[in-house]
Image (cartoon, rainbow, N blue to C red; front, side, top):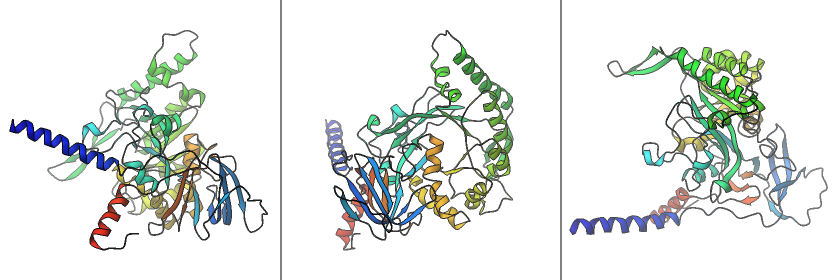
Length: 438
């Protein structure tokens, strides 16, 4: 009886705590109610251009005006004018290759839905598993990341990713573009193993490499034949791969070694894959000329990382975006590691600027470049008339951790709540201990 009462008490307390927590969760924004004009801001258009005294207008979720207030004579009647003089305006930052909405606490199995069993899962769709009640999107919005690619992991073919808005009641609301790409983890010729005896990492030859490559090649061969066959029995795995051959989906190749980069790209081109994207790190630099020749963009994982191999310059990951850009390779920045730290995406771009990348090119690496790679550049990624009003205003340079202070954010013209649970807790304890709440 006592044990039963204890269980009942725990359930009641848990329910009460859950209700209290839910009260702190921001409510998704409603449709844009009136035309808005952001006046006087420094507009970074995402295409390399900057307007130092800008007029950015939008209505019904679409950008209706992008102009220089210094020279243009614009009739602003009908707009709600918001003076943002001295502040900076940016297209919403875009985070590619993330597990946003799929994984919450990676150490708790029940809170992760980013990986399916089996090695070949092209028909697995991250879209339908996306959780809009995740705690992660509010932390991304707070730093200007308004769109993210929700990406499955695991196996050799992980599945199909989708681009999601960082606000919405459910996945149907949140989806920006469904099924943008297939993610493939190319086998390693050498696997890394940690030796507890010496506390060092050893490279061990992968004896199954050839058979694993053959298995992947056979899948692509079958998929290509399946698409060309006039009559066939429906096969969901082969059907999911068809977008690779008509260009409606991109093939994202995840690999870390230079030789494997060349081999995986060669295989994909052999089977007529139209759009190839490389997800890699420092080992992409030695094959930069090859990537440029084959017109393959690179999604760089965390800039704030260590070199892949001994003997590499310790600052190579910081210089990598600039080095690849100079070599003519399109670069988009991403994140690798603890999902909660993905909110640092703007500061990865800031580090790239400190190590040789031009500031507007760094902004492109988290706006227009990922938009092009993900196939959503006709809608987002730059501040242009006719595109979606997915943008934000920062008091200062959004690539600087000290001045990335958002005052306004909009997704398709909808005013997004910036404060989340972390800000609520900050204000709560600032009041308790007498610190001035910001």
